[in-house]
Image (tube, rainbow, N blue to C red; front, side, top):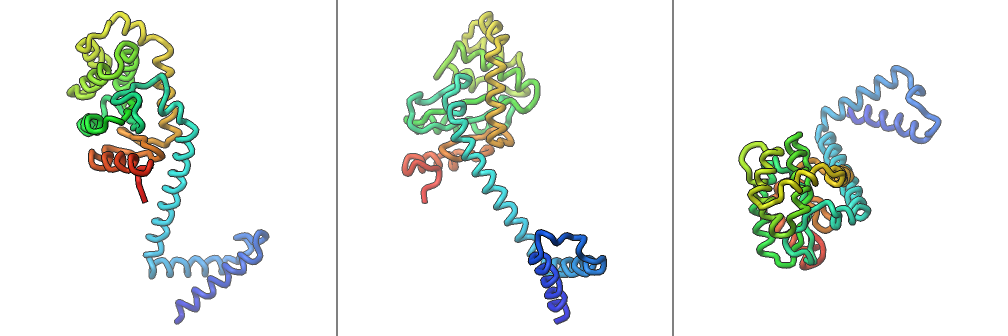
Length: 257
């Protein structure tokens, strides 16, 4: 067939380039040869468009594999800041053998949607330690709420902070400084001390640390979760998180194979 003959010609030309590499360059081809190769490649792709699909799928696979490897390395390097930073809150069982980390934003609708899932998981898993990390990416109001919550953490820990967190997260409408302080007041926080703590460098440093960790983990939104060696992006729902936790209990990984 004429097409196959032209394809063979193109292959021969490309092969000759490969053989002479690295000396061969695009300039080594004449204008006519370049045009011929271009036409052949265009004809081939038009007649075999699935090649483009397969190439994109392979590119996506490689990209995800590279991202996964980068995240896994980052999880090892950043482990102290992810699991044991002093700029975070711990709920559930502080001594739990399994740790689930959530990066959240108080203005994130998907975080609000995920809250019942997290409440249920903590009730059902007595050996679950949950780390809450303020990741305020949805504007100035989110940063203000994170600053207040970080200062509240100096007064409330464990179940008391968990109650405050739920109260603030489930606030209707946009959340900012006023709403966060109102939630703190309802939680019995000393507001004078809160105001003083909010001005401390620790508050800024804590949020900056979380933002840095999130960046190195390539987190693209909230909520984002870290469990074992896996990073999970989005409000994936109770069932998926439950299954991953069960696998952690069985084999120490989020997926047992």
